[in-house]
Image 1 (tube, rainbow, N blue to C red):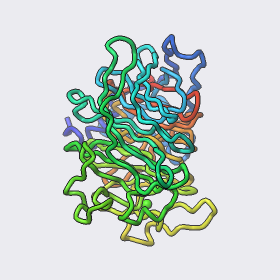
Image 2: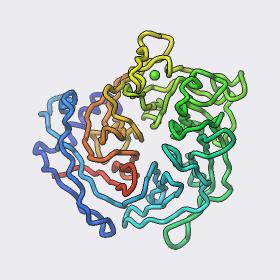
Image 3: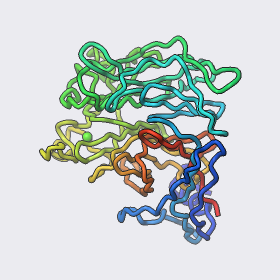
Image 4: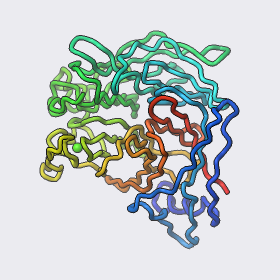
Length: 413
Ligand SMILES: [Ca+2]
C-alpha cells in the first residue's frame, strides 16, 4: 500500500474506485418538494485540451469513469444565491445577494430564514456575499458574513460576525451580537469587484479577498485595502505576524496584494492557500497565495483591458508572482472548493471552480506549485458557488434568479 497522500496512493484509489463498465448517464430523483422541472443531463466535456481520462498506474487495468462521473439532483430553488456553508447538523446556510440568509433542510428542500443579517447595498455585483462558520462554531456559534454596504464616498465590502441561534422547532433562526469586523477602505462609487470571499486557516486566522473595486491602482498601494487578500484574527484584530504589520494602518491587514477580483479562496489538504481571480477581458488566474507576495494587478496580466488595450504579461515583470494557471479565453471563475471527501475518491485533492460566463464546473488538478484545468463539465447555467457536503457530496448554486441548489453524487452503475 503506498503511503497515504502519495501520488501512487492517489492513482491506486482512482483505479480501484470504479468498475470497468461505465454507467449510463442517470438522473437521480429530486426531493418531493423540488420543482417539477427536470434537470438537464450534463453533457460530456467538450474542451479538447481536457479529454484525457484520469491517469492510471500500477498493475490494475485502466478503468473508465462515466463522463460526467456524477448525477445531479435539484434540492431547492433560490433567488440570486451567492454562497453556502453547511452547519454541523447537516443543514445548509445560503446567502441571497439581495440580502437574505436562508436555512435549507437538504433532506426535504424546506427553506427557512435566519433573521438579524446586516442591511446590504444590493446592486450590480454588490449585496450579501459569503458565509462561513468559525472553526469552533460548535462551541461559539459564530457565523461570518461578507456584504456590500453604503457609506460616505460610496460602497464597500464589509465583514461581520454574529452568533447563530436556531429555532427549537421549525426551520429558521437568528443572528445576535452582530459586530462589523472589517471594511474596505476607501468606499468608492460603482458596484463591481467587491470580491469578499472568506476562508478560515490554521490558528483561527480569517482570510478575506478584497477586490480592486474596478479602480485598479489601489491594488499596488499598501495605503488602501482594495486589491488585497486580508488576514485577520477571528475578532477582526490584526495579527502581529502579518507581513506589513510594522507599517500599521491598512497595510498591517495585508497578506498579499496585486489582486483584481478574487471570487474564490480555499485551503488544500496540506494547508496551502489558493485563490482564483477574475481577469479583465480574459486572463482569469489561479494563484498560490503566499505571505507578502504581489500578484501584479494592474501592472501585469495574462488578459487585456476590455477596450482591447494590452497589459504586459507576468513574465515581463519577474518581481510579480505569475499565476499557477490561467484561462484565455475567460471562464469567469466564482466559488471554490478543494475536495477532501470520500464520496468521490477520484476527486480527492482536486479543485472545483464554478464558471459564470463559461457556464461550467471546472475541475483543477494541482501538481506541486502549479495547477491545470483537468476537466470541464458543461452546466447550461452560470455557476456561482461550489461546496462540499459533510458526506462528501458536491453542491452547486446557480447564479441569478430562480437558481437551483444542486447536489452531485457519483454516477453509480
Ligand atoms: Ca496576477
